[in-house]
Figure 1 (tube, rainbow, N blue to C red):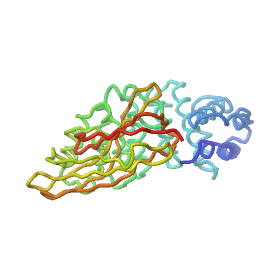
Figure 2 (figure 1 turned 45 degrees about the vertical axis):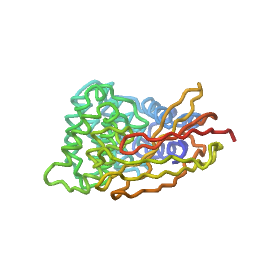
Figure 3 (figure 1 turned 120 degrees about the horizontal axis):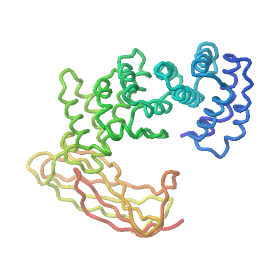
Figure 4 (figure 1 turned 180 degrees about the vertical axis):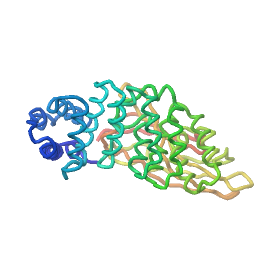
Length: 370
């Protein structure tokens, strides 16, 4: 994934300045020019916020004047695209809310929908959702019928309960059914891009409302006129967190019922592993039932925490159909390569298998410092 300075860095700031020179040639853009030198230590969202605030100071006036500048830039400036759109749309949303009127609010929603194909307006949309959820959702629901797949996706992605990099919308978290009409309208969308967002949105909901999500997914799978292969693929992606958690309803919906199996393992190739290396393990899974067993096979790593406690993380391994009386042999490696999203702490660790939501076996090992 690109670093923050590759997304909102000097090129983005200079492209934004060039765009505004076209749309507002008399604007001095003093704060925006100064912001370029201040980006260095900031996270991606902090960079966007810095440029948003610079825009609001450099382009004083009411909402209508700001919106007019941005519409002119969109129509006449070829550089008005890419990651600069995040701070632009955020400035539009903040200015509309500060104006406080329904006309500015509605126009900001329309302008965000118009700009979203240039990158996305999903982050800025949160400002409007937090200001007036009911009014925003009423307008956003209409986007599900848009001819533009980016706008349809914005309806789902911008209202996600746990959208990455974005501020939370507490009212959506408190009312998990509020966005379901949007998902119901889009889960059979012709665009995989849109359907992927719907799946991620439903997966977000599953972290707080697992039974509601299983109920929704079940209704989608049973809906007349749906393409079974397409809907099943979407539901599988939407239920991925619940499957890792071993939720019985989610597993059953995907065809993973309780299995009669005999598990040997996991067997570790070594009971020590260096940070940066990989832990190899094997297992044997024998089907004891008189019918084929459809198995979702995952594994759980018990990581040592800095305070000496432990925390678990479940990793997808494979799905298999094992005939009656036969044995499935698996061999895998788990990497302890250093990555930015996880810190490793030397000491006792453990690994378990998880088959159709049921954990089996436990193998202890020591993680060693490099």
